[in-house]
Length: 188
Image (cartoon, rainbow, N blue to C red):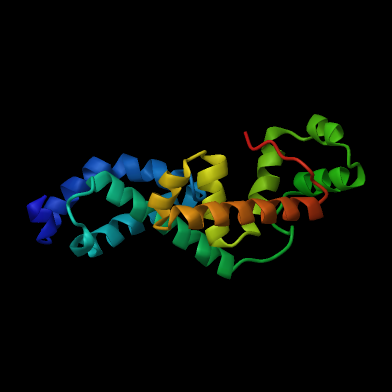
């Protein structure tokens, strides 16, 4: 570890090899599959650049996990800045599903007609309407069911900030889905 902290690229390569799967699992859970490798690479680049900030008291894997989550956050922040608002990115099946749901407000009809894939696509669309901060806090706390303390640690926020942001973000998500005529979504 001392060689790594002194900036030895070859020694850092061994850490990359050791932690590659750990970072890949984190990133794969937060960004689209086709962008996961790029974001994981960014995490390792940021870790190398930030070696001076590593205090050594923390587990290296935990320090690296926080960097990986922040890279995912940066990815979604960039996507949010360049997003197109609207349902134009949804497949025709998903648009038709949303039309059926809006026409018939009964949740039972929605559940009987909607397949898991369509529901997930609608959820991804709705999550895309959230700010990067809101998206990450909802993903960590609601979808991945991480504790407030874990989410705060990964995001570099206070626990109070995570609680407040998570509450507000879930309300925003509910409003987005409500405006689309969807009153409940099964996230599983």
